[in-house]
Length: 481
Ligand code: FAD
Image (cartoon, rainbow, N blue to C red; front, side):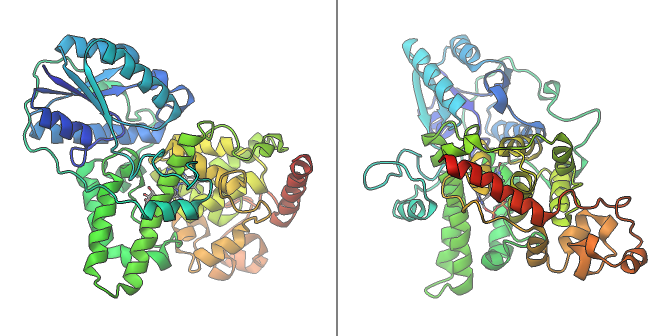
């Protein structure tokens, strides 16, 4: 009797334990992808993710096709479709890799039980994490709320070796499928995805290529250069990891091989490679937090922040979304995000801090904007990071540490490459005033051909006053805590 493999955020054939188990089982395989928007509530795929998903599914269909298996596409509620399809093909087993979004956990648990009651073998596997979120425990058997001890505990556990892609399988022909192009995942009118197409190639092969290129060319300088948004110094694996086109075990194993090649004195390259693995561990930490605190995407991890006196200034929110705050590094970031569906980590921190601390707009609104615009939008990493920047999350920096967007820009974009790339209207300004154009003498602005307020906005808020306002707002909840 056939095996039904349900693909979700594991859109690859290598190191895919559910697919591997199906191949081992030997019976004909049916591969399914189910567009389950209906069950996702507020957390269905955002616009940029839908664009990515289209490319990723096309790529997966190709890799499965090479192995003799068709990718079957269906849309709707898994609770109805999965048992119906299992019945239709007379499945003897249903396999999938686990997801950790609270809505998926709840649904999958019910589904597993319902399918098992029909006598089908049901099994789920881990493809998305180095270790299951419940497996990494404190000495007292609890969960972690601080990164450093979590990272230490993680390093003490052996990471399973990735499994190779199954070579050939027998597919079951003739199972009805919807057509990918009919799903409308790609934007049409207007087609806003030009910048995404120029920046990214979704799919497993592209993910492997990116990891290989990063380990060959960039990882050596990662520790020193990863905070410089003007340099192409990070892996840009995040959307590939989010969609499971590559798994963290594969990234871990390849990076460890890189480390072994450095020999006994790994030096700078070794330090950099470990830094990179530690960042991968932040992803694990985010999943750990989400698993143990399922309200993380909606509720502050530190409960006193529920009473924070937020602002509902819609005009300020719109200016932030569209990169028109008057602070160049913030605006460059928001325009990079809009154009490419991705944003450098340092700039994510700067723009997020500006939204919640300079504008006092609730972090959930920034989180939702990122959800719609990021190709790597990930419930765990997005929620944990927004809370971290906002000071209400696990292991967050103290609230009073407020990023100064001018100093951040000058420190991390010292030559101005990043700002000039995304704000060409400021390109002629010299470095001395690039991150603070409103302080430029009139003569300098004139020579640079810039009229502030016309070509580029004046600052939306005065950072010094905004900082005082934020600290005063924090005092209100501190008194209540
Ligand atoms: P690299 O520096 O090459 O890191 C390698 C991998 O490690 C990344 O691909 C990612 O999977 C993981 N990683 C690195 N940093 C972090 C981190 N701080 N937290 C969690 N995982 C990390 N990352 C997402 O994948 N999805 C999100 O929706 C997301 N939202 C964020 C929102 C805010 C406000 C902030 C401050 C950060 C957010 N991040 C998110 C984390 C981080 O910015 C991105 O993972 C990183 O910029 C991706 O670029 P990269 O692949 O080149 O990273």
